[in-house]
Image (tube, rainbow, N blue to C red; front, side, top):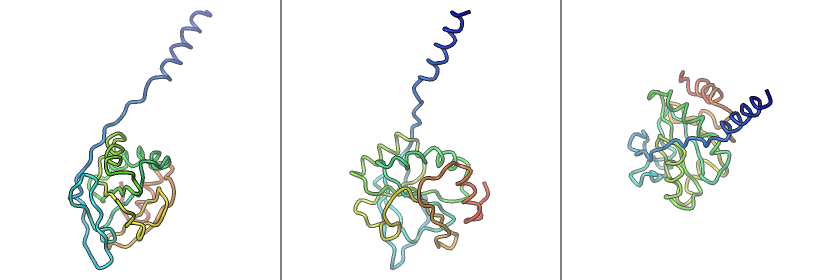
Length: 174
């Protein structure tokens, strides 16, 4: 009986120690981002190195998540956004904005390593502070008319919270 308990305990412990599977991401073109330029807009580069988009001119409904690869709470949100994005089916734009990064390559590595598959803009010099302020993570909910419907400061708790906020502030049901 003791041997069986010992074997079962070892099996249980070894299954808990299994390495986590890494989910591959993709640096996505920002050409799908719908935005317009006005007198107060600033254009941020795309993390893929291509044309970016005008912040302050993003057409909604959209969610803009401002993050940095060095930010622990930002990393916690990634699985929430990954699952959420898989359910959007084109009903809204999900856009990441990488800020205060050491290099564009660091941002790209982070996207690839963490399974991010939506477009991400890159703020190389802090220009987006005019719109987003300081501190991450922060998630902006942009209404269809381009106005800010809601700003969530801090880490999102779970996908249900994100879906609820999306429904409440953008009227998008998932």
